[in-house]
Image 1 (spheres, rainbow, N blue to C red):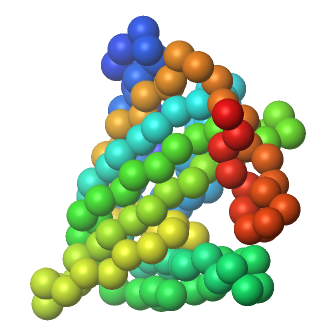
Image 2 (tube, rainbow, N blue to C red):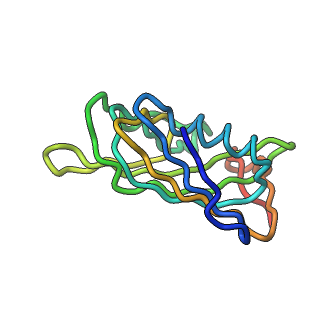
Length: 143
């Protein structure tokens, strides 16, 4: 992944993922490297494989809903970054388009880029943190 800061206030970055890069881990690494405590992002591009999930409230775990090992268009990737116990937490949802025009979407678990993924990430002026919500079992932004 290559990146460039495109605005100073608020800090805004263009992150360009290349073939073979894994998006979720790349976003986490970048957030840690830049000490991001609150940011939002959006992206488009294409993937060679994706694994997307849904949250099962009974088991309090994400389950795989979509597991594609084929070339797909990244139609939408949106998400946020917040801190939990001093570590960045990335929460993202993705919609991809298949060659037949159908779509699949869900919580981003894993996505491998081919040939590019263009992410625009903007830091928010207020810093937010996440904590585990005992009722749902999810790590949620606390205000």
